[in-house]
Amino acid sequence: MTRQLARLGRAGIQSIERLGRGHLLLLNLLAGLADLALRPTLLIKQLYAVGVLSVAIVTVSGLFVGMVLSLQGYYILSRFGAEETLGVMVAASLVRELGPVVSALLFAGRAGSALTAEIGLMKATEQLAGLEMMAVNPVKRILTPRFFAGFLSMPLLAAMFSAIGVLGGYFVGVGLLGVDGGAYWSQMQANIDLHEDIFNGVIKSFVFGWVCTWIALFQGYDCLPTSEGVSRATTRTVVHSAFAVLGLDFVLTALMFGN
Amino acid sequence: MAKGRSVEKPLVRIRGLRFLRAGRAIFDGVDLDILRGGVTAIMGPSGTGKTTLLKLIAGQLRPNAGSIEFAGEDIHRLRSKELYRLRMRMGMLFQSGALLTDLSVFDNVAYPIREHTRLPESLIRRLVLLKLEAVGLRGARDLMPSELSGGMARRVALARAIALDPSMVMYDEPFTGQDPISMGILIQLVRRLNDASRLTSIVVSHDVKETAQIADYIYVISQGRVMEHGVPERLLDSDSAWVRQFMHGLPDGPVPFHYPAQSLEQDLFSGP
Image (cartoon, rainbow over all chains, first blue to last red; front, side):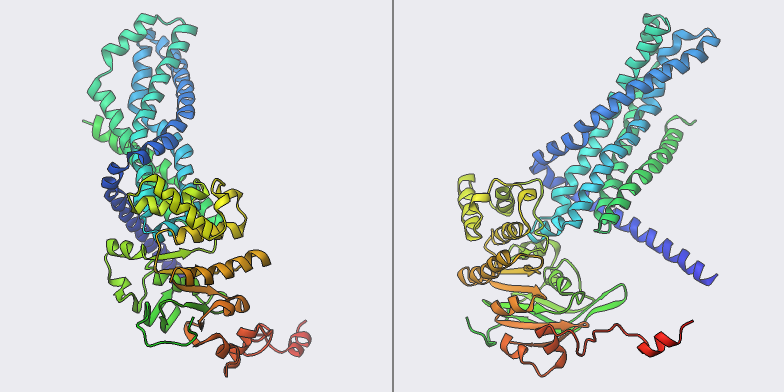
């Protein structure tokens, strides 16, 4: 009994220590922003690696999610004779929830895991220690550009996800199921609010980009420098990011849309 | 090169070093001096914390007690910015080479120069080619780290370590896992670079024969303390049975061949 309590206490202390190390890393990441401003090419390179290379998975997924939304929405809305509102239903679902959330989950799986593996392997092969010995701060030079690349890419990826999803919904709803094309667009135009729907979705994306990239970088930077350590850290990145995105989505939704 | 200890102030001065890892003392009261201009070897069995000692000297780890001075400055009292400035005067050759895998050999060697100077690219090119020439790899400048053998990677890493003309270079197990030719090249390079560039070198190794060839002074550490120190000839002929066993690689002695266990008779005849 005492041993189990001690184990529980040890696990608790370790979790708090990790949380502390994570926040210290975040402070150091932010402190590197001034350096990054002097070397924008580092950011551009990472925007490509983190953002552009995630475009394919995000757009393809967005297309299918939009198509499925349209299909499911049509069957329900047609029961009430409200097929014309299909456009607004698809667009609202995408820009408010599915765009930011699903693209963040895909981002964690595609870019987050890659970031953790990259940083973890750099640690395991002593590249980070090598940079320190060259009097180069690895957090500022390696991690900060990746952090801001993730933070800036996420809203753009979510916007692409939603835009392609709306088109996917159009192909299925208007092209296959016979909903009026004019109604699809005009209902969307009339009922989607720039501030309420789109801005709130963008804010969610920024938050998710911040959190997912932070988790990915911390897991890589804090991992055990062994192949098993890197593998576990990569798994933790995806799991923790998924929990963080879904949990934060609930909190943000309650704050944004609650009365 | 003088083989004795001079009265000159040491470049690195360690006093009362104590370092714990997971509650276990890796170092407990270590005193050590690294003299300027010489090759000092730090030797000891695997797992005694030789690499840890280099990381403590470089300020990558913090000791629990004691002081480490580099050129008169207490490394662990420096602010982060000052520590980075001090590291520009140190080079370190990691066991793995630690080359940046997405950069070519040329760019790896140029990396610290580009980071810390505003020299024109034409001058950087000349400097890099000279550093690569010093390690015999000028012709390999366009190769990627994945195309290099282990020995070549260490030589490139050495060229990078001396890119900013440091006053001290630390070598972490430079000879481990090398074929005889690569090992011969590295042994010769350590000594030649030290003398030609007026460096101070610290070689951490457990390759006794190779290290004793080039070292001016040797510290043997084990169980968290300095077991003995002196010029190589003296250590090879040490009064301590443990040091003699280590230096000559004897299979049995104070460090027994057998892992501690009950007697063989008891083990064989007491079981079911």
